[in-house]
Image (tube, rainbow, N blue to C red; front, side, top):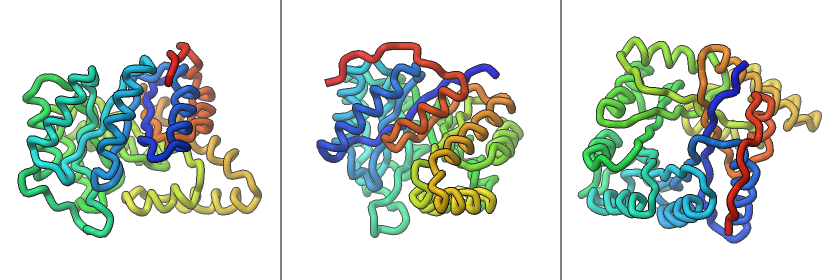
Length: 288
C-alpha cells in the first residue's frame, strides 16, 4: 500500500494552555510532511482574529504550508476581502473558503447586509484576485440544510466552477460513503480533487455529538463498538483500529490524499499516519 499524502486541520488557541497544546500538536505532526495545514474559524466567526494570529505565526515560524479558513459570517464583502488580502500580504495564499456556521442562538445563516450571500459568491470574488489556492467543503452525507444528496453535489460543482481548486469533505465513518459521493461527483462532471476528511475519534461522546450536528451518519456497528469499548476502557485502541481501517479502505479504493481533523490532539492522528506508512520526513523549525 502506497502511503498517502496528508494534511491536518488545527483550531486557533483561545487561551495560554490552548496555545501550548497547538504548538505541541504542530511539533508532533509537522515531521510527517503534510502538504498543508489549515486553521479554522469558530462558529459565527468568533475566532477570526485568533485564526489570523495563529496562521501568521505558523506560516512564519514552522515552515509549513498554512491554509487559513475564511467565512462569510458577520462581515461585509470589503471586510472579508481585506482579511484575505492580509493573509496574502503575510505570505499565506491558501484559503479554505466556507459559508460558515451562524453564531450560537441565531438559527439559520443570515448574510451580512453588505456581505457575501453564500460560499459561491465568496469563491468567485477570491478567484478573481488571482492570489489564492482555494479549497472548499464537501458533504458525503447530506448537509443538514440540503434538500437531497444530489443538491449537495450540485452545490459542490457550483463552488468548484466558481474557481475553487479542491474539496475537503466532512468526516464520515465508512469508506463506501465516500465512494458513493465520489461516483456521484464524477457523474455530475466534477473533475477537481476531492480529499476525504478523517476524524480520529479521541472522545466518542464528543464525536457522536459532532456527527449529529453536521449530519454525518453514524452506523449502528460503530455506535455499538464504541459503547462496548468505553465500558472496557479500550476506546483509544478501538479508535485507532477503526480510523486506520477506514483510511486503508480509502487508499485501496484509489484515494491518495487524506485530510485529518486533529482537534489539536495529535497522538491518535500520528499513530494512524504511522500505520499507513507515513513516517517522519522533516525536522520542524523552531516554533516560538
